[in-house]
Image (tube, rainbow, N blue to C red; front, top):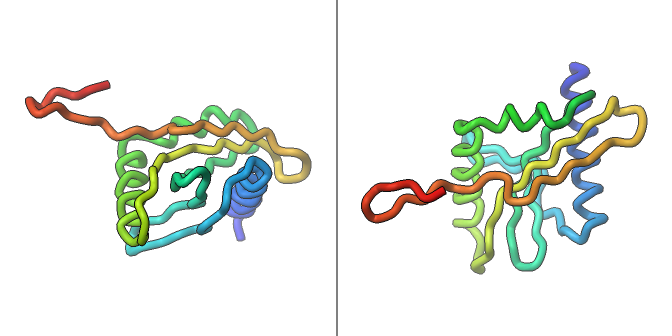
Length: 129
């Protein structure tokens, strides 16, 4: 397995541990449906949290650049597909967890809650920011 894949797996493990320590329930890891994929699906306070994990050996904030509009749309489609199959109504949000570290020592975890929000249009087609 390539080093970046190993670092990514270690980062996802660190993100899962962080979420559990902060009272989240991990429902799924590496959830897939057709071409859709989500790193972690968690639950807390009757809310489903779609979590995108970005791991970097340094400068974790540069990971946010990878969450472009295309990736945001992909995450929203995945969130919709996941909650469609649930028997109960839940709130839904999309978080990003940036992990910084080399995989040998402690990681720095930056949890960005509600990082991806859908753009809402008014009945006249104007975007609400």
